[in-house]
Image (cartoon, rainbow, N blue to C red):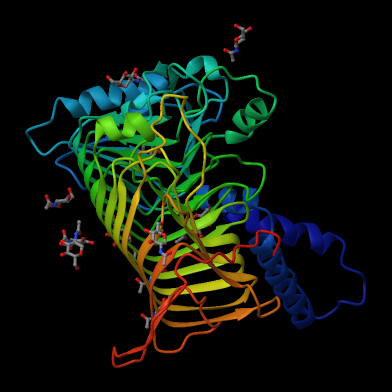
Length: 487
Ligand SMILES: *[C@@H]1O[C@H](CO)[C@@H](O)[C@H](O)[C@H]1NC(C)=O
Ligand SMILES: *[C@@H]1O[C@H](CO)[C@@H](O)[C@H](O)[C@H]1NC(C)=O
Ligand SMILES: *[C@@H]1O[C@H](CO)[C@@H](O)[C@H](O)[C@H]1NC(C)=O
Ligand SMILES: *[C@@H]1O[C@H](CO)[C@@H](O)[C@H](O)[C@H]1NC(C)=O
Ligand SMILES: *[C@@H]1O[C@H](CO)[C@@H](O)[C@H](O)[C@H]1NC(C)=O
Ligand SMILES: *[C@@H]1O[C@H](CO)[C@@H](O)[C@H](O)[C@H]1NC(C)=O
Ligand SMILES: *[C@@H]1O[C@H](CO)[C@@H](O)[C@H](O)[C@H]1NC(C)=O
Ligand SMILES: *[C@@H]1O[C@H](CO)[C@@H](O)[C@H](O)[C@H]1NC(C)=O
Ligand SMILES: *[C@@H]1O[C@H](CO)[C@@H](O)[C@H](O)[C@H]1NC(C)=O
Ligand SMILES: *[C@@H]1O[C@H](CO)[C@@H](O)[C@H](O)[C@H]1NC(C)=O
Ligand SMILES: *[C@@H]1O[C@H](CO)[C@@H](O)[C@H](O)[C@H]1NC(C)=O
Ligand SMILES: *[C@@H]1O[C@H](CO)[C@@H](O)[C@H](O)[C@H]1NC(C)=O
């Protein structure tokens, strides 16, 4: 650091013009130049900042397990070129030997650690230092193929096997992925380009996928540029995701959902910043006949204090794959900005299952095209084998404290004769609109209530109650339709 600091001083001094004669002026000039150098340095590119950081000693990783390793202990090289797959596999194998003794921690120091996909183990903490990046290799030949997720029947995009995830785990217990905001980078650009050119024969892999596991904590890290969904806990119990940043380009990064809790129970997702190319969070539970047969719901899910931006999709979604059912979801203190849709529930005939006991509270919509959307004809099916008579049920869905500005269509609840949306309620809503006042609270086949006055004025399908809970006016037209996709 001293070396770097001295260089410009000498350099500039040689160039000083002759009018600087006194020591005082010289001191002043040196001071100003030094200050400007530090200022330019601070505001310069990330490379400059990284260089600055590397010159300092690492911020020590806290000891979180009885046994701790450094990826360099296993031959890892963080130069962004060396492939570290074997180093990671050896490290995980070493930690696996400590199960029953509190497990082990793997520290990944600053640097770029290129790797192919690898598996984690139980009782493990993966700790990513500040400036550490685990980077997925782009060449898909390094990505193993795995059987499809059982509740989807096929890979989500292609029949047959699908690519595994960069970081993967199955049948684990007690797993932590954390750090000082280190990064897991999927280098999705190459995958998105191949997907667009139809060069892939198998469904793309997620960045981090943990299956059939419990007691999972993911915190204090950044996940970026996933090939497909970013974080996919499947059929897991007791999952906490906190203080995580998830990034992908907001356009041109297909299917880069942030977090997809899928057939999971007891999940907390909180204090995250998510800005991605598809849904910020999408709660799922399997696809049509495969999801119905697998029969595992997503339930007891708490989502709070998220900031989400989703230019092509929605901030927080349920579905469209929800065939195992989704219940007891609380979403609160949510801020959605510059997004296509805010809150979305999507399903279709053939899904079966149910969406029950869902509550949204304290949601801010800032420049969102459609605020709240329920769509019941999201007709994307794995194959022709779905049962069109398997219709999802809606029950007890409440919205309160919904505020915001710059929203074009605040509400669009598009139920149908086959899939009526029942049991919705609205209370304390005031959303600033950007369009005309008519047809912006759109409804079709919806039964429910509004408590107190809300803005914009609700559709006529809903019953009106006063703040004391007394019925003011019962709807006579629950089935009437006022849906207009042209707005
Ligand atoms: C890991 O090892 C590298 C190289 O030996 C060292 O520079 C770094 O400080 C170590 N980090 C931790 C967290 O032990
Ligand atoms: C991870 O484990 C699963 C299940 O055993 C296996 O199918 C997969 O190939 C493993 N992945 C890697 C990269 O070793
Ligand atoms: C969130 O993570 C950042 C960096 O990863 C850390 O500095 C901060 O203390 C964390 N906040 C909480 C509340 O854990
Ligand atoms: C973590 O890193 C990401 C990406 O570099 C950054 O956007 C975010 O602000 C950082 N979070 C904290 C808490 O420093
Ligand atoms: C996809 O399949 C075609 C035809 O079998 C083959 O030529 C091509 O290499 C495959 N692509 C990948 C990425 O596996
Ligand atoms: C959930 O997982 C956390 C982290 O492993 C653990 O501390 C907690 O005891 C678990 N909760 C239950 C109810 O098992
Ligand atoms: C996140 O980081 C902060 C600051 O280092 C730490 O206090 C906190 O325990 C971490 N949280 C988790 C869940 O790891
Ligand atoms: C909400 O999450 C942000 C990180 O996105 C964090 O800085 C803030 O402290 C959290 N607020 C609360 C009340 O926990
Ligand atoms: C609903 O989920 C919350 C966690 O968000 C949990 O505390 C509560 O017990 C669950 N309720 C039921 C009826 O299971
Ligand atoms: C849904 O909520 C109702 C009433 O609050 C409760 O009786 C029921 O147990 C809940 N069901 C689920 C699956 O959470
Ligand atoms: C509502 O959520 C925002 C975050 O989006 C938070 O800052 C605010 O404190 C919350 N308000 C209440 C009343 O909880
Ligand atoms: C509304 O449609 C449902 C079927 O979705 C039907 O059961 C009900 O009788 C209809 N109500 C009216 C008033 O027509």
